[in-house]
Image (cartoon, rainbow, N blue to C red):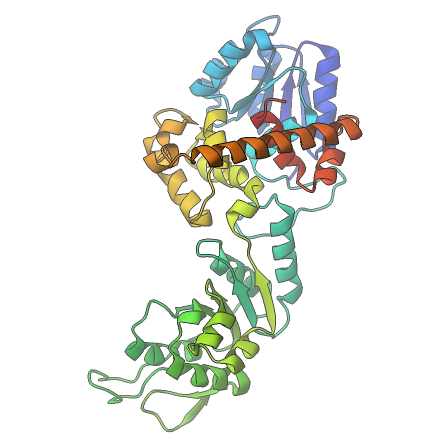
Length: 432
């Protein structure tokens, strides 16, 4: 369903410019000449672009009325430099964000996406990638990961997902399952690193009554439970060496025995495995079987760490906070973008949960984040020089790319090898 954006400005040329940009991005625009028309149309819109200076009533007065009548409607203020202080105060009082005149249209679309979530349509009407709920993708590298997952979903081949802890390996595994022909059958997750060694065989393959002390009844294992569906072996690199031949046998034949049993049972499952350890190094150490590695690694994909696709940080954060009717202030955005995220999305989610609880108003401030994010160890003097030099080099490269492309952000981003949204953030960070 096409979403509607109210464009409120008394200047016809500015109103046309913004409305045209909104519609090219795939939205429906509702041009409004003054505050009265803005309030009349607010009920049928999902977002409002609101000029601070209007002829009949001030934009901040309109914002106050909207907070009473339509409290969930996100409002992006359009402000001249002279009104900047009022706009910043309004963000603290409930506006989603503000943009300075003259409005950069690339930054406008980026801010709208942050307010509403990823666009359902692009300007040319093509559908956005179908991804699981809560998965927010803006970076090209993550789009490629999910595009590859779509291509392999309907095959029967085993899939090995590599990546650091917290990058979303289980989410990707579930995505492959839901896009496969097995989607109506069970998806069973096995945490190979969480179960004691003496119990994991029973959990995977089941056991017969009397197989060991305490086995008073027969137990159905996860491979039986998942028959017809998918078994997700999380942290497969932690699987005990003595169980690896049994797993290899199941993958190759679809057959297994319960612990303490003599009868072979069959199962029809697709195996998806994931690990954050280097399995080739584990093979060299003798803790992982080479033949099992080859059977698991028929198709492999690697999820990059969050620090390599920081352009996904802010869209994910705004999506997470929207359910709490909160949003990030510009200063909070800078804090998130300056962090390396060693814990990846899991760490980001914990930080956002902390901030949503600690925030008093609708706007999340840096003070609402955990202390460690605000008091990270300062780099040494020599490191500071290096960082400073790198920032200067990056800034000069950005300016040169903009000069060569005549100020076209899209072409400049392509020239620099980064996304347009990432370039927009860097321009704001460097105050270009």
